[in-house]
Each structure stands twice: as structure tokens, then as C-alpha cells.
Length: 174
Image (cartoon, helix red, strand yellow):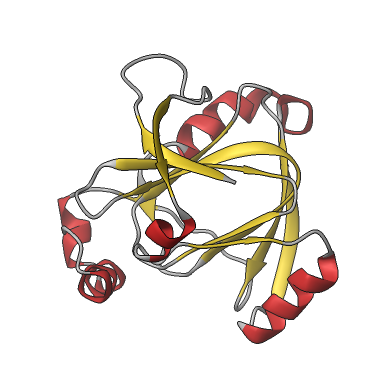
């Protein structure tokens, strides 16, 4: 994992856009983002048990597996959104980026690769994209039945109970 302030002045969303200003795991924790490097699925199983994750699936995001819908899907994943559940991803292969909003509403880019696991809290604004290799395989973990409902950022989300709780818990800009 490598995290840094995102400096996307132009260009493809799948490029690094590394500003050279790094962000630490401790900085991410202040935003409620948890990071683990787990080289063994048994460690993922242990974490899943501790956090009461009951379900999981695997997804491969690539042109080969998604065909003609790949580009539109990657663009939709990159739309800024939040979820009302934790978003948990364990990277099985490939690489990609999760961008999360900082306390001051700036972007932080988190590069994930094989064996990285990230947990985003409910209510955090974020987005996802593959890297320039256009391939990532991830295990998605869920506390209940698998669901993935993105709520795209807009003024109405300031009143969303999960967003409000997130903002209050972490003292962030609404």
C-alpha cells in the first residue's frame, strides 16, 4: 500500500498522479480507513470473524472479464460516492486505487496491490479505479447479504444518517 495526496491536474484516472506528499497509515486511521497487509487467507478469515463479516465474493475488474461494459463500469466506480455499509476489499491480484476525502475535502489516493486489505467506514466519500494495467481481482466481504449500493455525492447526502454519523465521529467537513 502506498498513500499520498492526490494531484490529478489532468490525465487518465488510472495513472498514479503522485504528488510526492505521502500519507501514513495513521493518517488514514484518523479518517476511519483501516489498512492491513495479509499474505494468508486464514488471516483474512480471522479478521472477518472478528468484525462479523458473514459473506464474501470475488470480483475481477478487467476488460477480459467484463467485456464491453468495462470502461463504463470503471467510470461509474470513479464517481464520488458513499455507502451505508463498510466497504471491505482484499486484493487477490493486480492493482488499483481507492481515493478518499481528507478532513479538508481533498483527495488522498491509496494504491492497493496483492495482499492489501482496506476497510472504508460507512459515510466516507470515496471512489475506485483500476491502475493503467486495467486489472484487479478482489475479495469483497460483507456483514450481511452481499450488497453494494453507491450513493453519488450531492447536496442531499449531507442529510444522510450514515454521512452525518461519519462527519460527527471523525470531525470532518460535511
